[in-house]
Image (cartoon, rainbow, N blue to C red; front, side, top):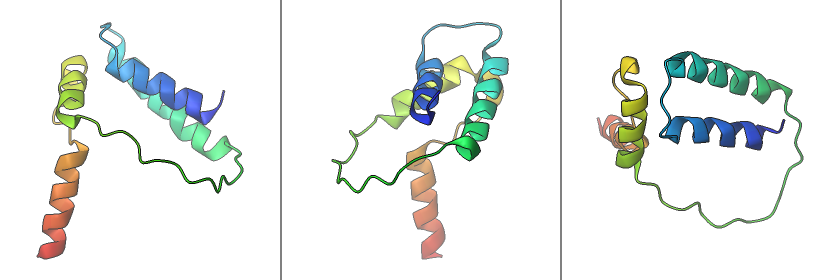
Length: 91
């Protein structure tokens, strides 16, 4: 399976409205699979210029992830991380 397919599978799983007792076990397994695939993937450089990706509503994504995986606790979203990094640089 390609890394793009595995990433799509992972994102689909995380953002899915389906709930299961095994969600935490499944996300750990999917993260493990992704980490292994990173080392096994072969790719060719693609010099083509692509448009920027569409903007995401990270607050909505955070709500979805928090509701599906409440046992994981605080979920640090990308916007918060970016703000914190800028703040750290200014110190």
